[in-house]
Each structure stands twice: as C-alpha cells, then as structure tokens.
Image (cartoon, rainbow over all chains, first blue to last red; front, side):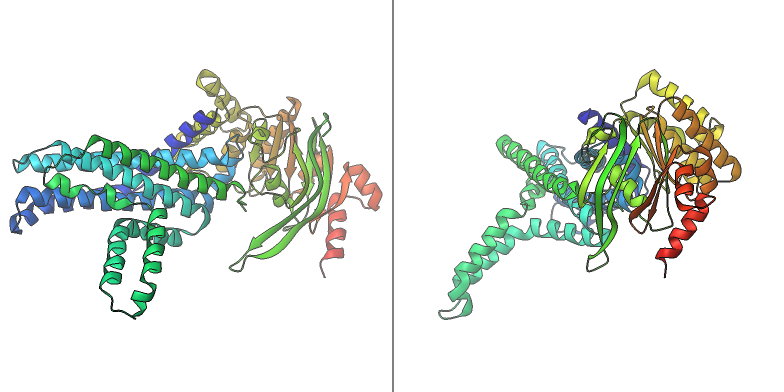
Amino acid sequence: MFLREIYLIAVNSFMEAVRDKVPYVVLLVAIALAAFSVLLGEWSVFDREFVVKSVTISIISFSGFFVALFAGIGQVQKEIQKKTIHTLLAKPVSRTAFLLGKYIGLLALIALHVILLSLMLFFVLWTIDGTISLPIVQACYLVFWELAIVLAFAVLFSTYSSALISSVFSFGIYLIGHLGNQILKEVYFAYRISDDGSFLREHGELIYNMAKGVSYIIPNLFKFNASMHAAHSIVLEQSYIIFQSLYALGYSGAVLCLAALLFKNKDFV
Amino acid sequence: MSETLAVEIRDLHKTYRAGFWLSKKKTLFGISLEVKKGEIFGFIGPNGAGKSTTIKVLTGLLRKDSGEVFILGKKPSETASRTNLGYLPEQPYFYDSLSGYELLKFYGGLNGLKGKLLEERIHWALKLVNADSDWIHRRLRTYSKGMQQRVGLAQAILHKPKLLILDEPMSGLDPLGRRDVREAILALNREGSTIFYSSHILSDVEAISHRVAMIIDGKISHTGTIEEITKETGRNSLEEVLAKEVSLVVP
C-alpha cells in the first residue's frame, strides 16, 4: 500500500506540475539561450562547438535549478497554503509517503526537463556539424543528479518555511554547493600567504578546518559539473559516474529523511 | 478503548503556536467525549470554540498536547486509523486543475479502490450526493460552493467508511444543498456508518442527530440527546441552551 500511495501522489504531483506554466516558461527561456549559444560561439575566440557545449550544459543546470525551485517549493507550499493537504492526509496516507510521492513526481519533471534540453543540445550540435559524444550524455546525466539534490533541499525547506525563505535557502545551497570547493581553496591560499603575526596566520588553520568541516556537510554540487569534460570531449570514468549517482541518491535520501522527520509532527491548522 | 465506540477522547488538550514569535494559544482544555458506533453525533458550539481543532486532532492533521484519542480503536497518528475514516473539511480545497471526476479517482485510489470497483463507487457516491451530472467532468476551479461541497462529501464516502467526520458539511449551502447533504448523512448512517459532524445550523442538528456535544471555549459543556440537554438546562431548544452558555462566557 505504501508504494501505491507514493505512486499515486507522484503521478498527481507530476500532472499538477506539467499543468503549471512555470516549467514551460523556464524551458522556453532555456531553449532560447541554448540557441543563442550558437551566436555566442561565432563571436567567441573559442571553438564554436566548445562554446555551444559548455554554455548549453550550464543552461541545463541553471534552468533545471529554477524548475526544481518553483516546482519543489511551489507544490509543497501550495498543498499547505491552499489546504489541499487536509483532505489528502485524512486518507490512509502517511506523511512520509506524501513527501516521497511529491519528490518522485517532481523528479520526473526534472528528468523531462533535462531530457528535452539535452535533445535540444544534440539538435544544435547537429545543425553546426558538431559531434554528439558520450561526455555530453554523461554531463547531462550528472546535471540530473545534481538537480535531484537541489530538489530534495527545496522540499525540505518548503515543509517548514515560507516560499520566499525556502527559495533563498535553496539558492544558497546551490551556490555554496558549486562554490564550496573554490572557497575552501581560497581560504587555504590566504592562510599560506598570510604574514607572520597576522590574524589569518594565527587562526588560519582553525578557519581552514572549520571551512573543511562545512564542506563535508554541504553537497558537493561542483562535482556534478562536467561541462568542461563535455566541451573537451573527455570521457569520465564509469566508476566516477556511479559514485556520483550513489552520492546524490544517498544525499537526497538523507535530506528527505530530515524533511520527513520535521514533517511528522507538523500541525496543519 | 471500548469495542462499541467509534470515537473516544479523554482529557484532550491542544495548544497552538502562532505568529512571528510562535506564542502559545490554548484552544482545548481537557475535553472528553465518546461517540458510539452507528450514531449520528452532532458537535456544536460558537465560532472559535474548538470544534475544528477537535476534528483535526481526530483526523491526525493536528497533534495533541496530552490526553488520549482513539478512532475506531486506533490512535490518529497511525496511518491505519484513517483506513475506515471519511473526512470532509470545513472548507474543502481541491486541486483546481483536476476535474471532479479525476479528483474522485485520485482519492479513491488512495483509499485502496481501483478498477471497476472504483468506477462503481464513484457513480454510487455521486448519485448519493446528487452530483451525477455533466459538470463533474469540468475543472474544479469552475465549481460553485455547493458543487465543491458535494464533491467533498463524495470523496469522503467513496470507500464506504465506518466513520465519517464532517466539519460544517452544510455551511454555505442553499436549502436544496442542505437537504441533499442531510439526506446523504441519513442514508450513510442507515448503511452502517457512524457520523460525527460539526454544524452551526442547529435546526439540522436537532433533526438528524442521535446525540450531541456542546463545546464552549475549549471545554465540553453538555453531552447527551437533545431531550436530555434541554431537560437538564430547562430550555426549549439547543439554540436557547447555546445562547445561554455563550452569554456566560463572553464578557
């Protein structure tokens, strides 16, 4: 029964999402930008194919982030604000099944978004006589898993805070997840070049260790960014792809467990 | 928990946390009541007395502070407590991008119904609430209050629940709508469902309830048959009893 509940809620959630206008607007903007990348390739000093690949994969990631944000936060918040959740949770449906169903339904939407934009990328490459190679597929595949983590956070935040605060938090996670590694490197670099007796020299190691601790907690989203590999046609090792998939699955699972825990005793007034 | 009881509440307390500072507001002060299987039980009281809060605790939407609550022998925090429960919220809100029919299919599925049985139950429920018309295939966002209420009642009874909890099922309805809901409640009760409902429309409560509980300011003031309550208080009707009780509380 638990699986059937999840399936029914997932289907309903997916159907609700595809009936919304937001994913289409984001998709159209992303397609327009991807088409624009061809022009960008013409103007750029780099190879046109290189620009199309790297820019479009980044567009898939960023537009997918907006879909995850709007759909993830929008749907859970809408259920709570519009009180449709009252009738739903009065059925023999557990709160965990509700959250999982929502998540899976919206993940299907994300998958659809990534697939459509990947096909768009293939089409653009075909029109400019570019090569459609394995690294592009790998990069798009990793974008999907990156968005799976972001969506889990969007669901988590929306169970306990308003849509605005949830959006800000989710954006923060996306940003830190991508820049976390870079920030860590900068902290270490600043510590190494700091003068003797300066604040950074005195406390640099502590600051670096704290930053390192935080980097273990926040998701390593930068590891899902394989746009440069795709642009340079470098095939990622299979073990890396599998590890990243499992990492995303485990991380999303942990975030959803936390969401379920917070949701368990929530009052629906 | 007695086998003969559909609902049992003992010394239930509930406090809300509301506002920016999450300040506490207590709404239920140790209420106790019992609803026997097969009864139509009316739950009455003024606005803000705690009727909807009690109902939401029963359906598991709100978690209690303390006390004991049983729904057909199970705690509301257990998912299984809602297997034989039908619930109509005070203001039913539905997915407005769905049609009434699609909504019933979705909710029926969540109640474990599928295939031909689900189709049969949908038709049965729609007929019972007088909603077996073409508008059931229109989007819910186009529905009037009366149509929404009928669909709301239909979704609550699809699985022929042993216990039906209705929060203000007749509010906002025209006289014909009220009559249809009243008759649906009586028909379901004849088929064996226990009905626990709240209402402001005391004439309807007097017409169909076997027993009644009155809640004032988060406390149960009277429980019993209408005759028992009016006799005990020396009043002629529930309206008079309620008016007197409210006047004692409101400064």
